[in-house]
Length: 497
Image (cartoon, rainbow, N blue to C red):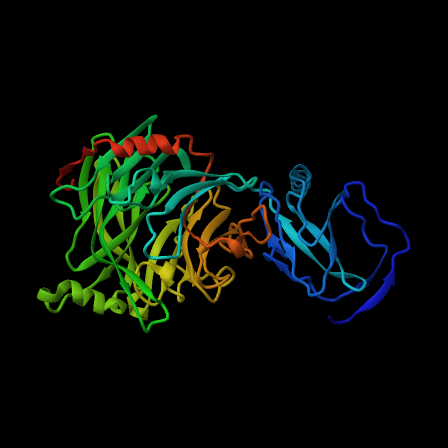
């Protein structure tokens, strides 16, 4: 500790909202307290669940935390403060557009008051729900994975669907990327591979199982992008494999052997090719909010020896450099224009992936790394932001870390974004929230709060594919399972419009 100064407090300080007594005498410390998770000087939505944390100061035996915003005060005792959720909500509601100042008193041999920090509370809320995949770290237990939903306003978490509801010991299943249309949980789709595979779609009050694979397409739909105004979904279709390295610090590489883009018309149950150049690896489509442009990424790659095509693709994995493209689109005629290069990442020896356009159409967020398209496995992966109005772009240094930043999405109002990161331990992806202002600047990210302060220290699964939702998914997991057990309706192929 530095700069200790003894100060007697002249009056007793038991505040009306207290659950603990504020010390009458203490020594001041000119340092912020060390807490885990780190919620110091963060910007949070007024409808977020309590930020539960633990004090990490050595030899500490007790603590008192005081939250103050104007006339509102909340006092919580303990080294792992547990907040009354009703009082927490009252405090954050009062703090809209303001700061909450936090004073920390920690007891060791004496009481010490650490340097205050703050929480800023903007006037814009975050979407109340998120959905995500939870997957174990082992490469042989992928069948034990779920798609979950979590209410951000409290700690309520439920399973949307689990592999184990359909898979058996003999026949396994793998649920793939889920997605909601315009963050609406009533329009949800996810893909199941292998046993009883198919694309499950909860749409227009119905639950359907579609086989999007046709004789004219590479695979079933994999990575989806719902059209914002019409009943279409753009997909990449991918033949994906995994490689394992014995000497590389990044032990696993996920890459496509081939990939194309398709468009699915939900009403007509019709699949159309968008891009299928044999020298291009197209992936991760994303619409603009008006639905008039489709962004995606693609890598140019030429095989030298077609007799060893697959082996060559695997061996030359670091040569895959994805660029950012877009195509104009007429929703009425379903006609796409020619592809336009938006950002040539390969020219600077980089690779870009996962484009996401902000709801106001002004910004595009992506992930950039040294190579490849599955950046969740790459420590070089960072968030990058494009201003679509003036064509400028930059690394989001205010949100990035020294480890992996990957899958990301915007809230409905565009003022928040969520992303997966391995900044905590380098092994497990956790979900982080950050405020996104109207100038395209992010605030200090914070990990999604949990009921227990040490939750992430004891949770050995990775989060991925975070999606905001305006409410909960109401279709039960067993309803999805029942539909998956049934036959799929085959999509019909139509030549490009």
